[in-house]
Length: 228
Image (cartoon, rainbow, N blue to C red; front, side, top):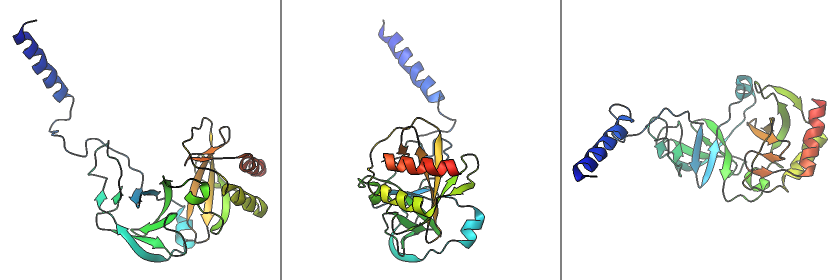
């Protein structure tokens, strides 16, 4: 093939590739419409804000702000590209400069407070056990089974099942997990009124946050499902 022909092909290829980008695109971010989850990251831990029902948020929360542990350095919404990898100081929707605080009475590896919202640990690569990720024993008020359709509370764990669940939880390990069946929604209510969802896969016996279940956990959840 002659050199001129090769040059023409290269030029055409470059032109066509550039046409695949939106008009006016010059490598700027954001480069796509991204539906961000309400997350932030600090001290190597990724946190997520859960959305309780309005009645819960207005009447049950009793959250006390602790000491400042950092601040938001970068707001991802309207700024980040779709291949952005979160780092410390990043937040999905919170403005740059917003302070991040501890929640009094709770370890900051579990809960933090920013922009008047509580964020719950979602990914902590240093955590090796479920207890290190979510230290439930001292903090849980209730456990509920939720509807997977609309998040309504369908059933409250018995006091004995709640205690057994928390005891079994401490012995579970954190690892990369796969799940294959329909999810079961468990809502954890803390003593300060904060709630968050655990998604459980019964067939795989895993929690989607990366926690492996055991036979005791499976037995407790099956028992409460039968009573719901």
